[in-house]
Amino acid sequence: MSYQAFIYTKEKYNIDTRKVVDTLKNFKCDVNNQTINIHVGEYRFSITINDNPEVNSESLELIHQNKLPKDIQTNIRLEFSGDEDINMDYFNDYIFITTTLTDKGYIVYDLAGEEVMSGS
Image 1 (cartoon, rainbow, N blue to C red):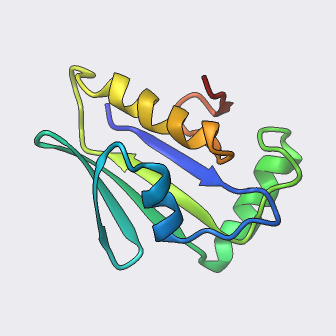
Image 2 (image 1 turned 60 degrees about the vertical axis):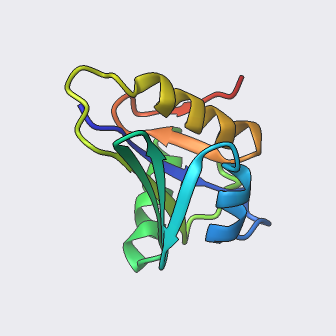
């Protein structure tokens, strides 16, 4: 299993790596261009900013399917992924990171469950 999610913000908020790293200050992070790497021991999660043109149409389709709220930025998202984790050793870390983001107002859409994740 690997972990994958799309992360959105409300319409009025900007996405940038500095804000995300500040939100994840309890984790060991480094930034490489538009990608934030989160290290948990030898394991790595990544969050990459994606503002390619197809993001808007994909986001609007998820809104149309009632899988995302209507008041999100549709032209940019963060794409969250994790290395392969066959034994799910880092599942709790995934939940902790995504809960940290949702608690700070980010909208996390889990691709495996096809649903918006809620915070703590």
